[in-house]
Length: 159
Image (cartoon, rainbow, N blue to C red):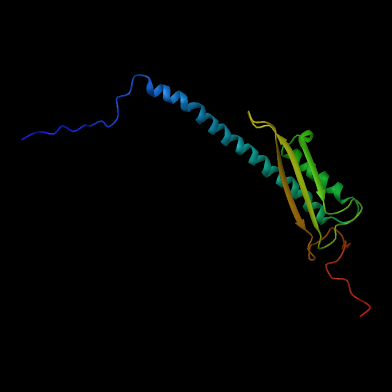
């Protein structure tokens, strides 16, 4: 009987140092991937902080009554941003939905947009945006008895 010899190795034999050379080519790709994941985590952390700042601004503006609501909300937003350790020079806060001299009306909407410029590792400076919108429902408790408006439709007295 004739014996059949089977090949046990399907690949060619590697030359000395080939694995090291392949590893050297792969290292930059792995490092770029790791740095990108860490930078994404940093940006998402800032986004969470900015949404918290915006939420506090809208909550305070929608809850308060009387004049100067925007200043009250902006002051609270700056205070929360400072507690988060955000640099005021890189921070931009915008509160809309109510003018300076008006109380936000029940049924209205207050919106805050907070922008922050972030430098994450080797990447260029990015602007991270956090925003929050809060409705002022009819049932919401206010700081005083001033309703600041009504959710009821206007009554037609002519008919």
